[in-house]
Length: 185
Length: 150
Image 1 (cartoon, rainbow over the protein chains, first blue to last red):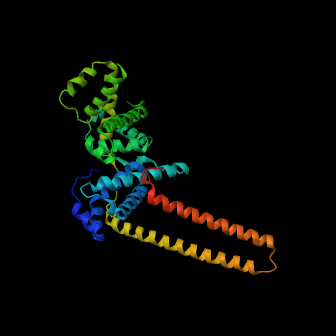
Image 2 (tube, rainbow over the protein chains, first blue to last red):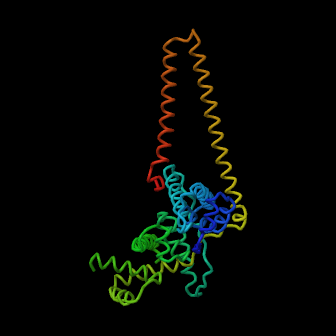
Image 3 (cartoon, each protein chain N blue to C red):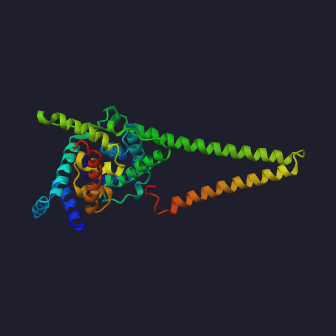
């Protein structure tokens, strides 16, 4: 889910002044993109909910460090992303895999040409499966671009990297996906 | 095609897939597509893109959003509760340990070697505890990379 850029300076100022309810406004504004961003990385509803809430609590605890004029969601996303990647690494080291990614993805309302419907539906199923085999960072950038429709500039801002890196990461993520789908392409 | 041209083609291919080609990049990309290998790669990437565009993240049930803020409040409250429980346990454990050591120390029937062992063990545990706390405190205050993913 794509975040619509907005200026949160007034709300942040109130939160920094100690108004807890003002932070509720930020949570309400960003809870959905936060949850879906976490879901793209970790692939499970429970983990996505847990981590997105945990990230909001950390953001609240560090809100005094937030520099006004910046985008709140970009700042928050960095916290969320670190928590998600740490959770994935912790699970990997404990040999407790994250749940299958297939359940985290569904087919959007696609109007298929009946002649190609079966082929495309099979490909979609394979893509759903294959997404689970990508590295979280690869899945993240594909979701940002193809599911959420972020522009390269917006992705660069969220991931805090240059535009060239966005394109390069996107290429390698898609190439990995293409290689996984070799038998159906 | 050399490595530089290949990198350029890949970059333009991403832009073409995502509708971000600008001006002269269109003709530059079309030139690359005269090469059969490039065309094959482009067609495969295009199919991948079409398939991913048909997907979306599974929607969460509406009740998730109704309870989201309350869930955060509960979580934060539980965090505080855990801190208090841990702190209380540490205080009680420390008090109990001191009482046990003091009783053993005062007991004239306990051999001197056991008393010495208890003293060394207590000193070691105290040093360990102090060292961990100091390190944690120092890291939280001075580590520039604490927000970097492990």
